[in-house]
Image (cartoon, rainbow, N blue to C red; front, side, top):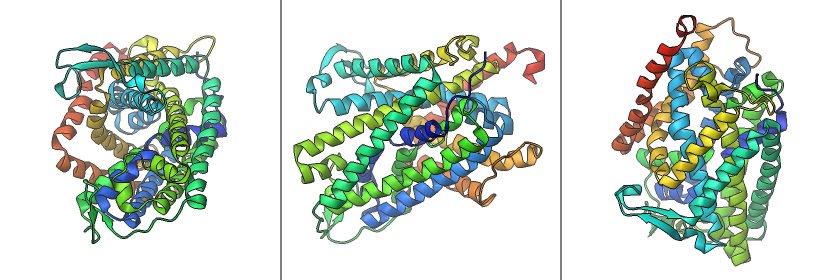
Length: 464
């Protein structure tokens, strides 16, 4: 059995927009202005991060159109550098990156829901051993059970057909964008303009009488926050084998979806800084909620919580829909448990892969370790992102005969720009957080012995 091409252009575009826009747009402006100090520089970082993401999308569009296979980066890295790099990517996605992202989204959903049901944050059981985050006791909260239930419910939905999962993605993404548009219009149309008299201070959010000096470390720290909000534009390539007319629909979804996200993010920040001063944004944990509270009172803040939950729901569904195709692709190549690579005979989905990824992500929710794991692997993931983008150049040399229905605009400068900025980001993160960065590399390299094991099990004609 093979996967079916049933996802149309709207489903592909909604995977890009719906997976990228999660909770970041409601939260990260605070971290960004704490690092760069002025609204103007915040917009510079948003634009720079958006252009970087667009450069990646333009490069991925060529790869996805030329290699419309399940797994996205898994297939691109395998073809450009060999099966080991594809396997390490699938290892990272299955055990840390994608599963950690799903766990993070599920937990964020329950945190927003506690605004309406505070008892969800209550602890129902504690293990008095240093098993929890930061070596503390492991606490189990009611909301964690809800987050686990939500993850498993969406896994069940995607189990029964990619068309169903795609339709849900389209519907929820439309609702999400409409709600965010309402928040933007409320801020720009009905919010009273803030009077900016001071600047935001670094990290502490204290008011400063003069603008902050811009530093390289501050710029890259703000860029990391922006790129976290932009993360996910590449996910549609993971379901490339299920997109109709992939040579046209994948490049369109990647490029236009990324442009739409950039526009939404810039408009949202225009609304925030129209109503709130830089110092207020710097000292407000939930920027969008505070803006709407100024305009509409408590109902406005509640509306933001609803919008955030719908936004997270769409990102969560898109992450399960796309992420489950990566271990499936590795299993199809004989580099993972063979049942993971099976297609359901009736529903024609990678059913076991969906269940395996979702169950593991649900367990990470219960462990409380997902944020720590996710932080570790962000650094190493950008190494793989850079390598994947460089694969455009590598495959032009290695596989000149490969059909390329779409060719990267601005080649080779666009992929080179992405690779150079990714390298600078990796170096800056290594210098700023050496312990977490090295642990992230260690988590990825842990996959090497397993790669050797799986490769030895391959038939001789497939091992070469």
